[in-house]
Length: 496
RNA sequence: GGCGGGUUGGCGGAGAGGUUACGCAGCGGAUUGCAAAUCCGUGAAGACCGGUUCGAUUCCGGUACCCGCCUCCA
Image (tube, rainbow, N blue to C red; front, top):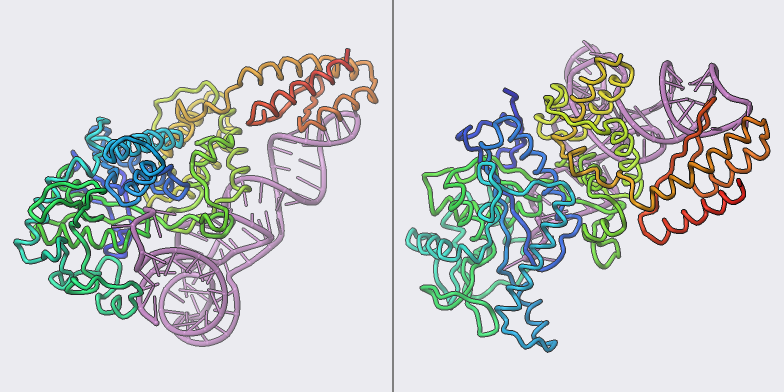
């Protein structure tokens, strides 16, 4: 069996991965707060941990891995969005507006992450809503956990709030390597007066009439941010499970607080054994932010015609624990490479095993960059092989790439010719015949004229001794594609 | 202020205490009516300063610069 090694943030070391139960490997990924479209940064953990999920399924079997990713559908940003709509004149009650907004956002999220080739979370291989729990469906479990924490002396009630008492948990700060005292010294936030300690965080807070709320022993209110993940992971994965993943920005405070809650509620269990964190995403060397004007969503990129598979490839070019820079140049490179690969594997359906060196790279702390390099080498080897061996190498290549979620049955749709592409191809075929005629007649002035006008359109012309091929990419937007077809038509008229 | 990450050849980006990363671009050759594409070959690196070592880009210490978190943003 392949030994998977993962860098565990908790121990700050790369360790061999040993699941608690190989028959049911359990992993939790912090999902989105559903108030708006997922931006590009949101997509990075989804893609890199999708690769981990695929790797685990490969090693332990599809039915032996459980992958849970939550939707946070109770949040002040959601409330604000709903309130804004009501104030803009929408007559419906706030609850309805919130429900609509979160449902709509979840739909977007699914569509966008599907486009990136991310598998849906699943319980032992079975995709269901259960594997994508919504916070609002687990309020009773959260209340139960909060009551337990109060009973155990780790939380206290103050002015309608329930707060976690960080001083009651000596290990607080261990995950992120911070001490409570240091953090207080550098605190820049105003501290609520009812907190015993400035670092205490909210488990439950009161709701007013304009805010969604649930009845609780502490009055009508709503949960704090962190308790949902503690409650839902316990409900779906148990009190001890294998992997908890997310962006490095969640390390503190979110994951630190999750640990505090879960470990204090269940001091004899381990909670999550391995913590994985991906580094942040940048855009052209800068942090993605609305003020810099380099902020965009996954949907923005898809709408620009950048295929999800290309976005995925760009993500996987960089190791997940390093900062990743999103650049136009990488998109170009990724698209060119994937086009080449798709041509290479065309019409290939495979049930082969992935390459062992490739697998070793992936198992070594998800080294997707090294894995991609291995794919390049494999391709080169396959190309120089004799025919019978070639098939084997190609199939191994495809099986390997598919472990990265690339070259799958659905991901390569964008390389399939569209209707207009077929028309362009047809017209070019006729131009090509005219060009060949000129060449055969040794009328090179005429041949060059045709060739140059095609190249002027960005169409690369490849002439063999007897052959004439064209390479071009159809513009992403329909209007430009139509223009290209028209321009080729013009050339065709001069050929005739 | 506290904590964490980064700095590799023209660009992107890995591994490894001594031996080719890999991709893109470049250069040379084959090929071509000319090109392109393809194939073959090839130069090019480790922010800076010290230390450990027979030997460091790889380990240790320091400096500089960049980035992130501490502000319910992955």
